[in-house]
Every structure is written in structure tokens, then in C-alpha cells.
Length: 349
Image (cartoon, rainbow, N blue to C red; front, side, top):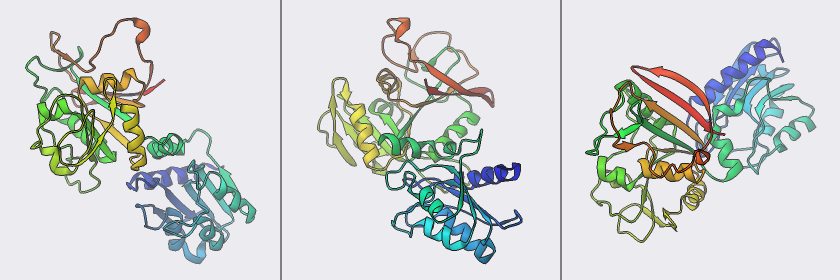
């Protein structure tokens, strides 16, 4: 593996990250001629559209013969809405393929790599210290578990308060932090809140960024035992509704009763079957507390405002913290300043 080839994989990963093809994976590809010059590139845009390899190889045309294909994900070997990519790669005449990561999807799962090698191509899988799965962690999680990757987003003052005693929470964090949170929404397939948040804030749950016209996450509402107004703004967006008991609400309503309200594990299973790959949770303290207690949140994004509440009103997580050993361990993966606030990223340990 050369330094240049590593740089080309980074380029392919950037191409992949520029699209939102879910439930299909984010995939980027770069084609090099025999001298190592870039002669084609592409990214997969979504179901039914050409795959990244096909786009890049079509652009390269006959110049690809004897060259190298750099692709973030294992090429498919099965017939779907588009022809198998392995056949396209072999027909192109490239002699070498560098694959960022194997595809865990049951239809692929090593078959693409094996087929390329059987055709006589030199195939390299993985680049040291470069994790191609980071381009689309939700996809890998979904294909391995059947559930969406759950990212729990919370915002609070430095002393841990998510809202004032009167229930008001707009705006604890700065405009810069809120814009960053809207970028999180833009990458999600669905965004979940509890009925309490709907009652208190009447949110629309769209990604609102200057000049943005891309993906909008589908709203998901968890309704426990307290009612929510059918006239709430969110019901104009055809939400998925998960309820603890039958309710008369617009949208797709699924009743999943559990001991504490909605059975959140069953809800995640259902969302996975509906091809939700990335789920962003912006629910209030009760939803956050339930997900944490049951080990259902995979990633966490905390926005800490440059402000102090000076008292205890409404914390970010509801529930009793009875013993120190009840804490859920996480791994902090990033800390950065956003305007006057701080963003902390973490993953379940």
C-alpha cells in the first residue's frame, strides 16, 4: 500500500460521505490508470441508481485497463436493482482493486471479494490505520444487528440542566451549536422524540441549514400514557408513531406496550425492518433515561452551553441514580468548541 493509494482511499471516502443513499450504503470509488493518475470517480446516490464503481469505471472507460479501482466498500456480486458490480469491475480490465471494508450485508459478505480474486484480480482489503466503516457507521450497525444506529443528542447548561422549572428550554445553547445539531439531523434517516417534547415544544424536526435542500429525516414519536394533541405540527409530516396503547393519531401508528410505556427494543427492531439505518434521538429526559438504562443508545452527542443554571430544575436524563455502579460507561471520542459552547461525542463502552 503506497501513500498515494491511501490518499485515494481518503478521496473515495469523502465522495461517499457526500451522498445520503440509505438504506443502501454510502460508497465512493476512484479509478487510477496504469500510471497512477485519477481517471474516474463516483459515489452511490441511492437505491436504483448506479453504484459508485460503475460510475467511476464508466468515466474512466478504456483507460481503466491495467489500472486500479479504489472503493470504500466490497463490490456486490449479486443482481439487485442494478447489475452486479463485480462483473462491471472485471469487464473494465483493471488489474488491482483496493477495498476499504468488507460488506456485512448477507447478500455480499465476502462473495464480491472472492469473485474478484477468482477472476484473477489482485485484491487488497483494508488500509492500516484507516477505518472505511467510519464513512457510514449506521449501515454497518444496521446490517450486523438489524437495528438502526441510535445517536442520543442532549443539550444542557454546564451544571446539567436541560430546561428551566417553567419547562422552557429555548435556547440553552448558542446558534452555532444549534446549526451543528441541524447538520446531525441532515445525516439521519429518522429523528425521534417523546410525546412530552411534542407537547412542550411542538417541533417540526426538519434539518434547517442555509442553502440546504437535501435529505429530511422522518419524524418518529413515542407516545406513552399521556395524550398528545393530534393538531401538533409534527403530524403534518407523516410520522411513525409508537404507542403504549391504541391512540387516534395521524401517521403510521404501531402499538408496542412495555413495562415502562413503549417497548423501545421492539421499536428499534421495527425501525430496522423499515430500513431506518441512522436514528437521531432528540427526546426529553424520560426518553433519554430509558434508552440509557436499557443500553439502547449507541452514540451520544452532548452540547454543553457556556452557561450555568444555578439550581436544579429539569436535568438531561430522568430516573433515579441510586448507586455509583449503576453508571453506564462510555468512551469519549471527541471534544470540540462550537461558538461559546462545547460538543462532546461519546460511544457506549
